[in-house]
Length: 434
Image 1 (cartoon, helix red, strand yellow):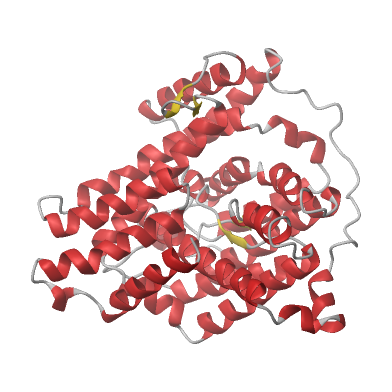
Image 2 (cartoon, helix red, strand yellow):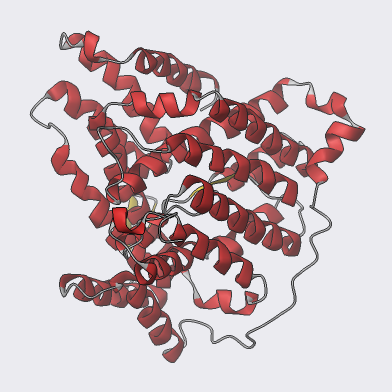
């Protein structure tokens, strides 16, 4: 097994991979509670969504770990689930069953694109400077997610955002951040993981985190969502032939394509897996993502995608696909331990997200800031991720500026033809989708 997962080549071991996989799971376990809550607004049974979420995450992470061999976990994506519930179902009035069919279609298209090598070609065509910007931008994005989720940063009608009140959960998150920083500075092994555990324990002591009333429970029934994505195809195919359904499929395609590309680049870059501006086995990783989306739709959940929280596992030492396998097993185990999910609150995971953001921003030093034609698209790429609250939006804005500034600087021959194609795609995205 060590040989298969290339432990010696990557300089890792079972202990580091297990801790990394566990840390990744803790950082993204919130999706088991959040996804049912969001998709429940669409009228889907929350118990069924809980099971579908855990199964999609387990299968997706397992495929990524064994087939892709990357330390990246997958689960139903945040943002895409909100789009599914609030736009597809509640705004377009498309039945949630048909919405799942849209996710299924997008997954099948992704499989075709991955088999033909289109997705891998696109990722390898992205210039190294923008890859560093994407990595830093995702770092800023997940830091903002952590700050917002913990209440350190809150909404303000006057200034959009402002500091929250330092009490309750917010104070717990600040405590966790301080503890994690101390552990990181002292170079303690598994500092991020220990920070999560210590924060959860302190939260329970001060009644800020609910002490579980039970440990084990039965697995909820998910027959109401299992294979429902096939119903419109088999029973009402005419409902799929309209512009709204096409927009739904294309939106799932677009956001997942570039969210996954950005996450894959960021995690691989942090783990030191990028060689000569190319990612080994990128095609396998993208195929794993495509298969996870397809399988997840059949279970009964929105688009399954690579999770940027995987960077917390990398920061804890994960380097191989074995950590993703560990995360997958933990998602399966979580099916029987749903009462314990209350311990992993946003206040508990916020310190991990914030610290990982700090680590990911180290790639900023590799951007040629003295060259304005490079600095502008790089800056907008990383800035618009947290401000637009979307990895895909940040990539879109930066990739629109890149060909423009490079042409004006007389460096048009250095721009890959695919980047010109993406320029057109993103312009159309902003006009017709956004």
